[in-house]
Structures are given as structure tokens and as C-alpha cells.
Length: 278
Image 1: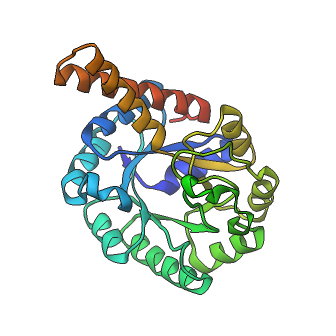
Image 2: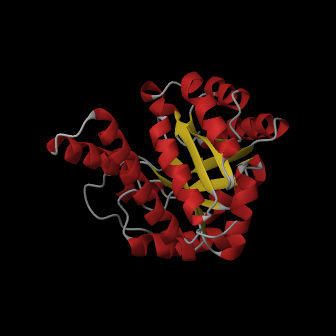
């Protein structure tokens, strides 16, 4: 069933687990994610990101993702991740996305507040939820996760939520997108302070590559949503490589890819504690 972000994250926050966001650039990945969620009876978040549109154009993939979410036997949020432009975010809403992650974190503070608040107004009018970002979760390849001056402060979080009315807040505490060059050092104390300062569900971006203990610690400190993409790509690529080495045909390789991604998703769902939470 299709739901918005608020309907799954409030319960996750209250019961101290996290719901996974698994970006899906094609129907193979969507099948793997939803199948994993249904088997484990877990809510789940699927979608795509603006930077991923060259690999799965929005108008082509949105109808398939929407249909998959609507016919699922578990709650599924259809999320447009890291929306950078109003035009694309509004397009996603019109195509049926139930959640928008509007990313104004690269803007100056005033512009981020103003543009995020406007996106909240638009999305709420269409029955959708909005995730914003304060601080900056950059690229692991650039070493951004280690830049403490990019981290979110509790004071910034309070001001941001008050000014924008977002339904969820992505915070920067030492993670970054992509493959890490070195082990990330997460500021769990800072996360706990942010959690104590606001009641809005908190989101961890740059989850691929973190240790199991990193996930357990961040969820215990208040994270209610974790974003995963790179780990799924690695699982899919590994299965395709092994299939080619075994001389399998295209369809057999495709099925092996879906199964391997599904197993990776199930591992994360169980780690995040959302299994059986519907």
C-alpha cells in the first residue's frame, strides 16, 4: 500500500527502530526491495534521486514504482530523493510520489529555509511529506564525511524545523554518500543532542559502508530512517559478475541479481529493526 513518510517514521521513532530507504533505478531493484519487505513484513521506502535520473528517467520509472507500491502488501513510501530543483520535485509529486526529500543544503542558510518551506507548502497541499537537510552530507570520495564544519548543530536543527515544518530531517554527523575512503567517524553525541532538541524524525544519509554497530548506535541515538543505495549496486554487480563467470544467460543473471539485492535489503531491514513492524 502507498503511504507517506510521516505515517511510517513516527511509529519507527516511537518504537526505536529505523525504516530503510532503498533507491531503485529500475524495476529489478524495486522488485528486490519490495519482495524483501513483504517477506519480513516491514515498512519500506523506495524511490529514486535526482542525480540518478540519467540511469532511470522519472517519467519512465515512476509509473512502475507507483504500481509496485500500491499493490504491495506492506506500507511503501515512494520517495523522490535529493530533489535539487522545484521543477523536478513538482514533477515527481504529479507522478504520484508520496514523499519529497528536498535538498537545499548546498544553499546559504536563508535560501535553504525559504525554499524548503515553500516545498513543504506545495507537497502538503498534495498529501505528500517532505524531508529536508541541514548541515551537508557530501561525497565520501571527497572526504566530506570528515569535515566537522559541515555537521548539523542542535540549534540549527531547531531553527530549521520551526521555519520549514518538514516531516523529517536529514542530519550531518559524519556520514557521506558513496564508497568511503576510510572508516567514518560518527558524532553520536551530537546526534543524541539533536534528537533531544526536536521531535521531528531524523534521517541518516550515506548509510552504505557503515558497520552494523554504526547502524545500531545511530538508531539507538534517534535515527528513524536510513538511506541505502551503494550497497545494493555492489550486491547487484557481484551477482552479475558471478553469473557471467559461470556462463549463465541474461535472464538467469537478471534473476540472480534480483535475489542478491533482495538478500542485501533483508539484511538491512533486520539490522534496522523494522522487520514485523506493520
